[in-house]
Image (cartoon, rainbow, N blue to C red; front, side, top):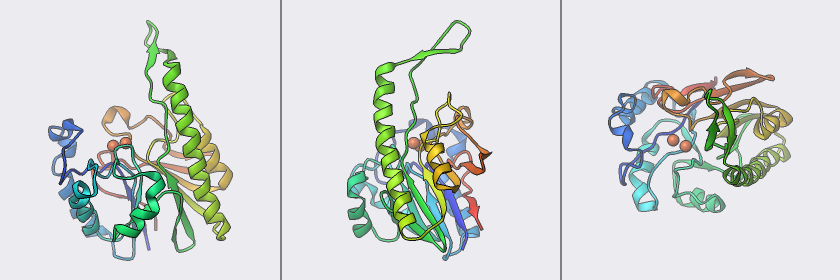
Length: 247
Ligand SMILES: [Fe+2]
Ligand SMILES: [Fe+2]
């Protein structure tokens, strides 16, 4: 019963591709096929595959259908976290998605049990600028209005994450894997309210995606930090090989 994770599939089988650079970037060449082949070789039906956001560019269920069909075709039990591109997914209507879309579980405001481990998570958020640089290229300030807006989204996401932890805790779980689509910290931070929450609830690992393209791979924490394993699992970072996060 292994658990694997990968994010940012950016599927567009039935809709327009928003990230046009994907078409020419060699890292994304045939990525759906490469991911499928790797999954079929390694992942067993009893395993869990967590997809860590930015699944589909589809805005409607009809546009997303071929992307859901692809996700359904991957082996293992599929668990999905909401990403910033997932316009089909209204956070308040997650229960409806879970009722209507078969073959996968949408993780938002709930938790997923895998043996004695609870998978908890939410989209998360980080302030990504604009930052203002001084003459030496150092960050000297940022857009205050956008920062305030980001702080409001972060507050809401923290509440959602905590609801997920609490629900699992009330059901007796003491082991947690915490999933965020956004990195847990922005490029200037070494800790955040998200890392603090992971520590407070004793999460074993924090798994995130969203940072894709070489320049973004080191935007946030990776490796052991205050007793927690942090992992970036964006698809192009993993070269479309889902990371085994628990045996
Ligand atoms: Fe993405
Ligand atoms: Fe993203």
